[in-house]
Image (cartoon, rainbow, N blue to C red):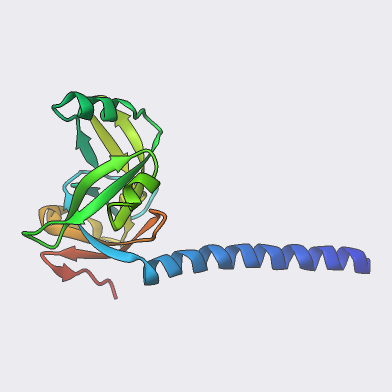
Length: 182
């Protein structure tokens, strides 16, 4: 192998390693420095033979119903399946969970008024806006998924959110106790 080919090969390997490291570092920084919010999970029944053991999580913030006023209908109708949506979250006074305060097509208009903005994608926009945030699956050790699914009414999740609305699942809780797998 010529010295030029060696340099190109080594450069390509280093570049791939840097890209991989930066992806991991970006996620770790989000988990470490992001604003922590608690979300209440809602039961759903998944099963996949190819994905390994996991639990499918659905949240109280995963759906926005069409409002009753004309202004609320107009805002709702701005969204179509596949659109990016930004959801402003506020902590409920009666418990530790966050809920939807407002939503918009851009984060800028929400950032002026709210501290926590979560970015999602509209999956369905017919009777309600069904939203996914990339927080819907949580992989668990083998044979642990079914036990968590049977207690889903008591499950909640801690999510780290950065200033751009990116999010990552930090911890899973059952009846207020953190689920640990080690």
